[in-house]
Image (cartoon, rainbow, N blue to C red):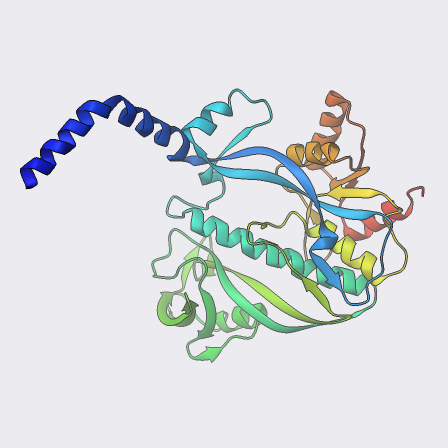
Amino acid sequence: MFINFYEKIKEFIKKYYKNIIFFVILYALFMWPLDYYIITGGGIMEVGDRIEVEKGATSKGNFNLAYVSESRATIATYILSYVIPDWERLKISSYTYDSLEDAKDVNFRSNIDLLNAHDHAIKNAYLKANKFYQVIKTELYIYYIDKDTKNSLKVGDKILEVDGKKISDLEDFKTTLSTYQENDSIQLLVERNHRKKKIDVTLYKKNGKLILGIYVNAVRTYKTNPVIKIKFKRTESGPSGGIIETLDIYNKLTRKDITRGLKIAGTGEIDSEGKVLTIGGVKHKLLGAVKENADIFIVPKGENYQECKQLKKKKKLKIKIIGVSTFDEALEKLERLKK
């Protein structure tokens, strides 16, 4: 019986070998992943659909997040990126901190960056609008692990305790570590995949600084008045929507309607102090905003702004570009626009 089955397989391959080769090549071309991401263009989405403020003010215009379309490269898309002018190749290594990291680590950081964008947007908007906000919970996650450290920690681990002491926030974590010395062994209690683990780590010196070999990022939960709800899809991540989120929240908290009835798109990370930081992919995002007939494109000052101005001149784009370095500057420039 086994021999007959083996003979049938041989006969099938002999008869259909051309088809088999064709499908193998097809699979390799379109399914085999390469160590690249392909940027295939940009677009915009109305941020108001993702942010809900209790009894929030309405506006005649709207704020839109500019984004890029990004996918893991295959042999086919990698080849096409040399043919299609607006497609761009980026090595996965440009997203990772060292060769030991993988796409899972990159995706985790992108999701943390999005949560940080929400955090900073809420803080800056509520503070400026003179509305109540209060941090009610802080969670600490391992964002990056130094390649020289030797322990079993992983990117994404949530830190719960240091040597049996519960950690409440980032400052508490730093203060606790400052009480130790070089070569001290410290036991961290972390949560990984909903399970708690105790992991021993050792403090060491690098570039003259005493470090644990990890970079920790804080994710905060706020209590606000009025109540705010921010809901993004799982596929939407990264910090680049920060300034637009902040403007939209502020607009809902006040009665000024800073949109002036315009379709406003933009990009730019925002920090906890309201500074707007340089971001990637601005060329694709600007073209996406133009394609969607946006009136204004907000972008960080500096290299991002210069790149957009050059592209506007080169392609004769009909859109107003506003460069900003802070949330306050963005508000000032929007408030000076003509209705």
